[in-house]
Image 1 (cartoon, protein in one colour):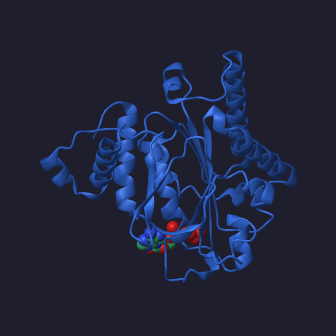
Image 2 (cartoon, protein in one colour):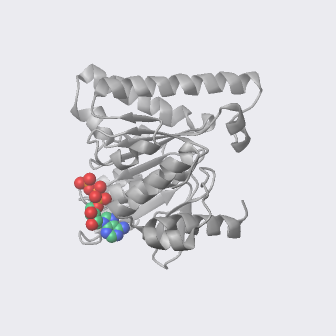
Length: 294
Ligand SMILES: Nc1ncnc2c1ncn2[C@@H]1O[C@H](COP(=O)(O)OP(=O)(O)OP(=O)(O)O)[C@@H](O)[C@H]1O
């Protein structure tokens, strides 16, 4: 899709959500889905420039102290994925209410049961291996947009809050099994079209070990309490170079540092969607996925 066309579609879809139903009836916008291969709007940088990232072949980590704005930030890639009828959405939410708003758009919705989460991760892992076998047989390295027609749809797996499954509930063995599965999905999933988005309010080394953190191409640190917890999200050494999420004021909700592969952390303010807007988007996405628009 060309840039102007893409922008028009993106704007129309997001604007659709923030208009009243009456205005929508008046304007009757042409319904259209997004694509997971298109850039995702996250917010604006310090110069008010839009910040967009492409999730295909990437994973995203969001972390920060409670109330810093992770859930609002998480709704942006989840919303884009939900509106993208060329991908599947697998949602893991121990609290049920964070990602629950998108439940009607999800192929799989996993609640607080750790065994369910493990089973879903195993299913995703099996799907990943199946895709690699097929890619190998076709002498190819990765799935591409054209593969959707052959059943290779990207799968976006979203975990909120990942520490709930990896460090809070269940037995030690179950938690370790879950952690190993998630690590494998993050490490090997990208070329097979498995995209992992994980959020946590516990930016500590036991929840985000360096070897796992380094597998996330996008790391989004919302306000953290210390330089070291900010470094756990972004990578060692960024705080001493002046990039620390501990410097974000507590009242700056939705402000975070975004590290995209190869760059420096950028201070950005996430776009904001109210619950009402999220529900409107989720309804629209569910209808698009069902083949009809509201
Ligand atoms: N981009 C934003 N613009 C304006 N307000 C925001 C923004 N992001 C977050 N907020 C405000 O901050 C509050 C907390 O945000 P959010 O629920 O996303 O935090 P959180 O980090 O997910 O918290 P928790 O870890 O406790 O779930 C929101 O209810 C909202 O009022």
